[in-house]
Image 1 (tube, rainbow over the protein chains, first blue to last red):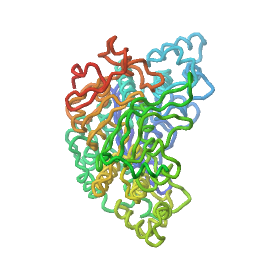
Image 2 (spheres, helix red, strand yellow):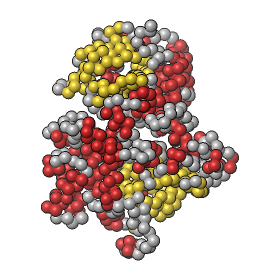
Image 3 (cartoon, one colour):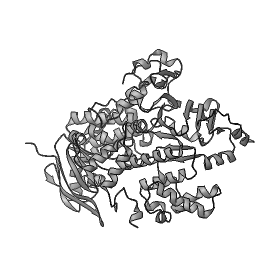
Image 4 (spheres, one colour):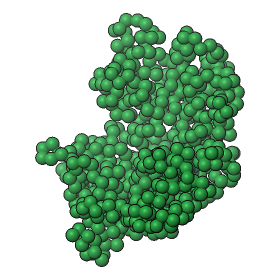
Length: 281
Length: 333
């Protein structure tokens, strides 16, 4: 039997008194795609940041490619970066504005795979081609590219050192529908072609349905439902998952029911998005 | 002077918003950059009308002209009337009056449209006081408004500052402010885009109920085709500074009559029905200035032929739609 490439066990992350992530566990098989669904304050982004090593968990373990991630030494971080890369909603902030796209893509290569400049250049060309960017886009500065092109470039950079896991945090949320479809198609093709596994963090159930095989639904830091994505959407078990589904606009949208169900789920809104801080101050 | 126009408005102008053949360009002569061309949009009393498009399609620009807000240095052609007032010809005083009493606008980010260092109560009474409502009465109305948009404990809320509210709650406050003047027209520019899905449903429900109670006409600007189809009586689809299709909200999904509408539908993943493969549209959305001659969509359109380059297709009826396409019969859902 194949081993999971990523295992998260009883993960807890506290920020002061706030429990952002509460006892979350999941597994990701090689080449699979797991969705983490939730609204703001659900803890989904915190999980992504813990996976990428941007936050240290309060307790719980992350096992990556068979090794428990403990150490935060320089070497350990490099090792982790070779296994797992992250894509953000707006990659603009993660590119050096004064450096060409091609140079940015070559950076992880220089760091992780020292070698001849020629070889790097050839690999960058290959990567650009893989994500559907031409040489002109490679020579451009980040600000000269459109949002969709920048997201392609971010994907190319993440793929440069052939990680086993890609964590995508709302990676298509800021894109126009037609561009979003292009990026989703690209992600699909890449997964088929390279066997890379995705952790796909998103608030958008339609997108999650399209991309992922399994999913966890999160609310207030906890997993409220998990399973095969198609099953979750077909027959949601938890009232919150049902509320999420009912909240999606559709012909014959029953807004009053959504409002009622939401209130029923949160009778004493003392925390989270549904309450304003008027009740806490 | 300009006020005369208001009183002499033709009696048949029942629409709260009438935009006809609107063109917009910045710069002049050779260097002019066109932004909008031939945009015709109407919103009837109490009607909800959607304006849908991707970035650069000109949907926000169109909505803003209803308030007389043009980009700096822009020249407009065509006609824009709000409750019979000619907005493009209006002077500053008429515009100010219009914004104060007849038209309100809600933006995507409530934090950007509300003064962070002033209390919610001040925000809500400002518009009322400007209309001459006495201070005490205005304060009472503010409480009433907050109650109507579902804010618990309005008395405490009026004393709080914007940062003490979540995005969804603050958007309710902004809606309360927008409705305080009982406008005839509400311009909602992506009012729920920054909100969580469950919050979006509540805010949309709120907008719809309030609008129903007051008979306010609403122009609902959004990039979300599903949302527009679910909420709006009629939907205009914009592409590259032009309206390419107009259809009743209900029939937009069943029978798109423009290849762009169809492509948008096919590119959006859905949670309903069978899982269908999404089809990406090649290329990227254009602005009017960079779009090709003739039909703006023709370089991305699977149905395009040589005749599409000749001139901008006129709107023609097809099914329940009016579409700017030469071959609407070939657009199958």
